[in-house]
Length: 331
Ligand SMILES: [Zn+2]
Ligand SMILES: [Zn+2]
Image 1: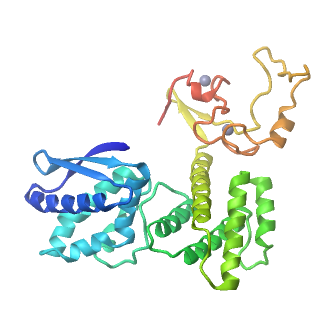
Image 2: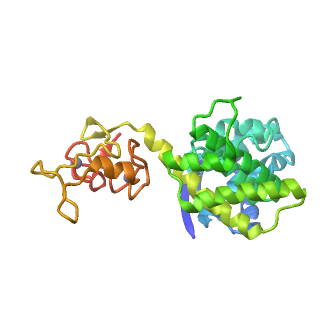
Image 3: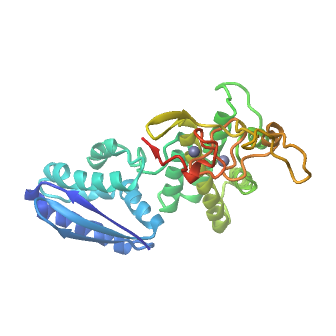
């Protein structure tokens, strides 16, 4: 059980309406297959202390589901003085909840969503920032909570994976492209793709081809779950990877340094001599990094390590970056 708390603020004149909304959230949480307990206590001047308890997947899922199943919209429809309560209670409380919980809450869409002026699948609060990871999480969550049927999920997922491959391979729109399996093979040469993920890509594509021909629903719900879990991990990694590639410099003790990419590390020891391998031969670092991905974060030569990788070298002292011997990085 993961638990966290936050202070949520509303105008104090709306505290009883706020209580009603918390009561609604509590009831939803209790009914959830992965129960989420929401406790709240009124402090003063419109401030509530809210404690949320539940599995990490459950808390994310319930907040996403309230958007995906239009729970906020239907709740608001039942209210007297609807637009006033939306503006002063439902919107601010839910906005504070998702802003606190998600890295990419997308709360700018929230008002229109609650008012029913946007399709329910237009936005979903997630932790994923890059396009494909976000698209994956939305597809996954819609299927996970039963908004999308297995068959439609597979069709959409397969199309999304296909787009992902084309995008990563720099495919130009409108040009002829190779079949799915060939694209996958090419991607593996230039981009991180472990065997488990590769097989999940293939299984998705095969199952999708299957339903296309039989026009039935796919068999193997368990398999679909397993595939989805693998892809979830992969797209989470992709998100961290993409974020890391954007950080080209790092600030240590007030000074900015260029981060060192995988393969650009110095292969010399403190005496200026090359490191030796187990046979006493000097290590050809250029060749090693050409042939092997980073042992910890799996990036290819020429890419930045993913945040927290134990192989990233400190640009200031040449030591291991995550030991922070030169001080913690600052903003
Ligand atoms: Zn690394
Ligand atoms: Zn250092």
